[in-house]
Image (cartoon, rainbow, N blue to C red; front, top):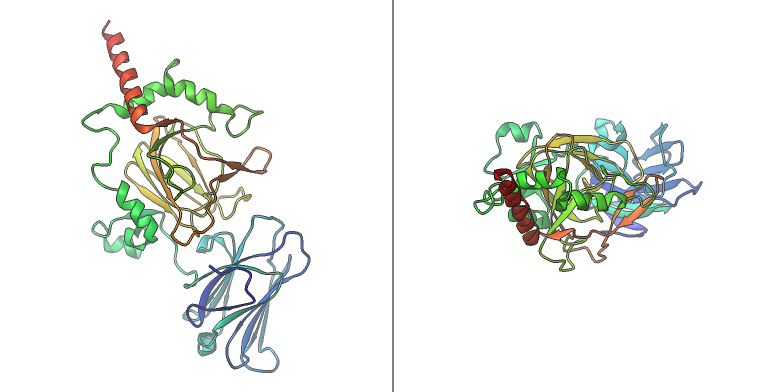
Length: 383
């Protein structure tokens, strides 16, 4: 990670994705340059209304000047990216997560400038830039949301970007994936084969634990406006060891038509597996943007993921009639030196609010509670 440096070396000559922010409300354009060792440069200037590109292959006047009608926006949570790609001779600008879906424009540079692009070695910040991170690769291909093990992948899966090979995950996410992706990691086991049915019964039956707990949580995200649908249950596995925002393993229970607020995940790594039912996931470019750039449904045993750079801001919703149950696993990367123990979300007044992940009940205790309620139901039905 790079922060507030004047000059940054490109990880690979001629290619990079540069993530950065600018001060809110400033009227000064953001300016930086891609440079080579022979006074060649690509000058970038971004204002509220314009994105200007000036290409100068050697000392003297610019050979190419381009102006695009897009630029900075007035939101303190927004971040920007510029992708330089010498192999395809393109320069892209985007707002939010660095991915093809958030591109605002693509400029195709002349093919005869390929060698010039390959000679670029550094970025120089001129003004109004807060450097955040350099990604080694340019933004080219879509990023699959669903994960498969490499022994399950087909050639079509790779060619059509349907699935992400689990080996492409971050090291931390591979660890989490391996913990929850096994065939024995199931909800309805030999000890309690009706576990999922018992959870659904507890949700819809007045007086049962899930029913009462959901009622209690109806003001969790807005104390002044109870909303039973903006609730879900968090059943935790293990304890917080200081390596994640909250307890790292959480079974989340989503009744029919219930949903989360749009929220972020503290730059943590995460994997999410559907244990029962189906969950809909919408992705947003940055916190404070209400328009989703991607949406997908995840069915039983589907697994999705978050990294510090991608899929961080989302909203989950159960659009089906039956309960959905997921296992969420969070962990900070090894290079994360500032653990932020909250999730940020957008409230009804469009303000960003901190949420401290808590536990509604320990998994072992919860399973016994559901088993007891289910057995009582069966006994009462016999009588």
